[in-house]
Length: 303
Image 1 (cartoon, rainbow, N blue to C red):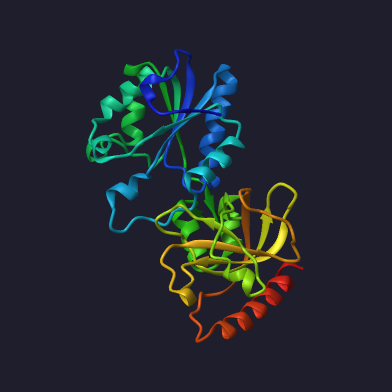
Image 2 (cartoon, rainbow, N blue to C red; image 1 turned 45 degrees about the vertical axis):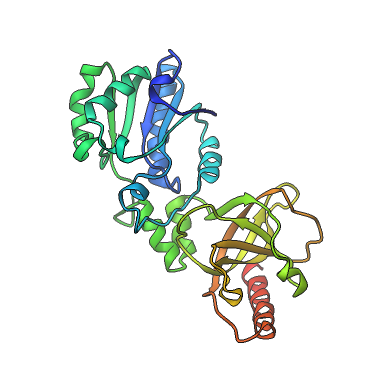
């Protein structure tokens, strides 16, 4: 998958396009991508997804940004698996927010879009003027077609990133899996920590989450994927580690009965079941006793 940083700097070949934040890559996002790729197959054209980093709501509401379901590395991996040929990643800013809808249409024209696939609730441009209906009405003047995709629903409710966040917030990993069409996980490269877990008999693989806010915290039964791992069972803590007065959110996964070296390797931690909230203990001994109970419970959950 090719990474492009400007809409008006793509090559001169025609393409089909879809646009959005795509945080989480849930079933609604996948419907947009599949509709775009269907147009691409019909027209024998490559597909390009246009997205943003940071996400728009992180710029629009800097004091209360939404919880990120996926960081950029995770979005890249998930989108690569869909068969996309190009990802155009635009830097979302107050300047980009204020551009007229007509200018954005000109950028799509400059990118040689033949078909643009958007969701029914799409909005862009100054004051949100470029709604899905507006884009569909204006598109002929810019030489491309706009295909508006209806909402994807489960149990009569629209699938959305907000619903996924709510499911995770309440520890409902089964519901999150239904909405995403896959288990929820986090991916990253294992880095060196303070080795506290190792001294306590629970060595951990430490991953920086690389997002301002996470959708959930706590202790979880997990499976870890990566080269040579194939869903290795374990228990993980996601949060700020209040027992050591931590400030930065960190994902720490203890892999059961694993003796290898994971430093520097990229892994994905799949969350299987939520066990409990993060706690602050009176002593390290109290914490270690709880860690043993967590490990036993996680082993039962994982079978």
